[in-house]
Amino acid sequence: MQLVRDRERKLRELLKEARLDRELRQVDVAESLGRPQSYVAKVESGERTLDFIEVLDYCKVVRLDATSLVKELS
Image (cartoon, rainbow, N blue to C red; front, side, top):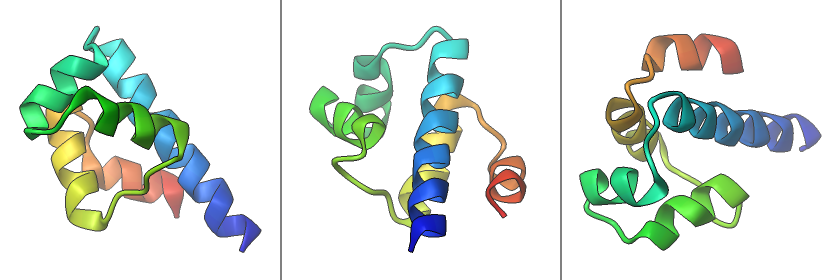
C-alpha cells in the first residue's frame, strides 16, 4: 500500500511541477479541463485522486508527455 501512496504523491508532484514550469495557474488548468479551480487544488493536495483518463487529460493541458509520466511512475 505504501508503494501506491508513494506513486500517487509522485504523480501529484509531477503534475504540479509541469503546471508551474508552463507558468499556468490552477485556474488556467481548471478552465481547460472544464472544472472549478478547487478541483486542481484538491488534486495537487492529494484530497482527490485522478483516474487514468483524467491523468491523460491533465497531461495534455500541462503539456506533459503521458508516456514519460508512466515510465517515471513504473
